[in-house]
Image (cartoon, rainbow, N blue to C red; front, side, top):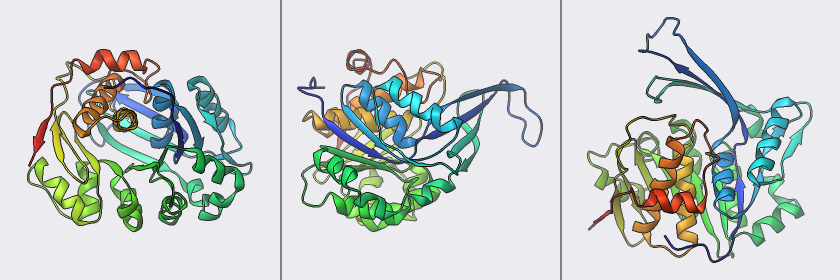
Length: 319
């Protein structure tokens, strides 16, 4: 990956809330009490990516609705610790959204509950505020996640018309990724897993190689589909490639790995890297996160990314 010549101005719109994760200590016993441990931190797809991008040297502004409560204070403190410029819309009489997940002993998700009603109040008219328009105009990358309403995502992409910045999205979940349908053609990249890709295309790919054509058929010109520990597939308007993550003996937690991949990929893309190099950089960022107990690793940095990049195998270009 090319070294960053200069920090980039990045605007992130989306989830910034509380993540609560319970991890089962042994084998999962459905429908029964399971011994385990509990962990809580600030999270959200957009916020995880914002913190990673800031630690990778960018000037990142996070814009998200938040409640006037202690959980909101926790998010604000996490933004400050990561160097993120925090510009929330605060609703004093509401509670900050939360995401509660139960993980298996190997770090994979069993089930999750998202209490996200506050995000519905981030309507398109919020984007018309002068300060928000100025942030958008100054940004070289606008990154959003699907915690926001579909009409807000569409309006956000519309606000960037006429600018030359990259426009990218994070899927968040199968239920929410469909919120991008009205603006897919205007996105440069969308980051999603196979379950989310199936929800968006309403079809199944028998091989990873099929995802680029299936996603292009619904209007998406570029994206990355992750597949757990198997090869991820990336594509843009001209090409597609497969990138295999290195074998990992143990996972700390899978939470935030996809957000980290988006951060590493976009960092490389902003630096002028091609699709293959960008995918390898994204995989390296995900590896850093998978070795961390946090959804946004405090060890994320340009130097660490360069070190881990040497462990990531080369990609396979697709015809």
